[in-house]
Length: 481
Image (cartoon, rainbow, N blue to C red; front, side, top):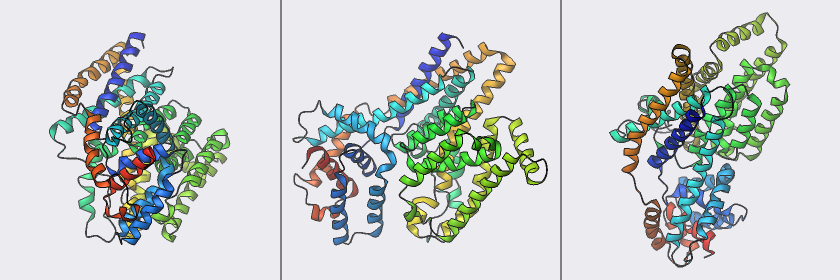
């Protein structure tokens, strides 16, 4: 790929990443983002636990609903889930806040600058990682495929945004336990819409660590499909500090894939990296009790999964030509003939289909909290996480076929032209969005400031809404009052 073409591809890739973020930039002082902000500025200080104890005491004394108390407990336990994102946010907030002199006098004005800077900084670092791995030396198809994949995802989001988002998907594919919802109400339209318009909750261009993790599936699978399996697991180890829970989910899928397709890697240093990621996940994960992992049906399903992986590795390594080893070898050969992208995604699809009825059974007999916070969403979130990999695989297939039929120069020119043309609706969409996000955050923070008051009554703080409570935490951590 020529240097002018490579430069044009990088510029177009960066433009689509930035414009798509402007469509989804929802940073506002709501409960989720104020909590993420509080985690970031408390990193290394550990002052938030004492404040959380006051909040729990107030919620219990005031008899607030159990669901609200569970939400606060979950967030408190989950603060280690986004360590890397929190670190970048904290640094950016301190840099941006250093220019504001009225921290104690006008905290909403301070918060507008620091929240904006902290969230934008994390997305910027995420995009930098995507671009750097996409432009690694080697086959020119990888950069073109990445550009085409990002363009396609951005174009779908733009089209639905401009049309009003009347059809979109949520990750909830199962009915909540102990409700009257049915399967049809959850599967339609959520299942098909998750592939074409998952909304900001599962968009790779959103403003939360979950969104950043989804975007980073592009470089993860770029590494895998270039044959750098060990590097992909090392990359996944780093992603554990972006989104801890999703890392465990992806690890399970990748180990299952490699147990069937590449069992020999578990006799190499890759096995040590896999073990490292697993130990990191088990040692840092804190939601096991909340989602009910100790229930017999969950342990049985997990044991069956581990046994299946162990069987694939054992018979794959032994390499016999009869019995189960022959069957597994035949499957491996058929999948390998179609290429690594097809093999990986086909196995992911089989795992999702096979585990769906099992998860449905687990969900049906669990508590409402277990259902709400995990089991109804595990398959929907998985689809959202692996969606960029699917689009990347399709883009790679398109680029490869075009190069074979029409040549490299034609393929390069066509992809660049399509990416450039797709910028037009994205620019139009971006022009319709808020051009003063710092002022918007400041404006929306002022009612929270008025509700919290100049002196926080921690004994009665449970009467406030969740955004107001997390605003009080953030203000206390920033100002000391």
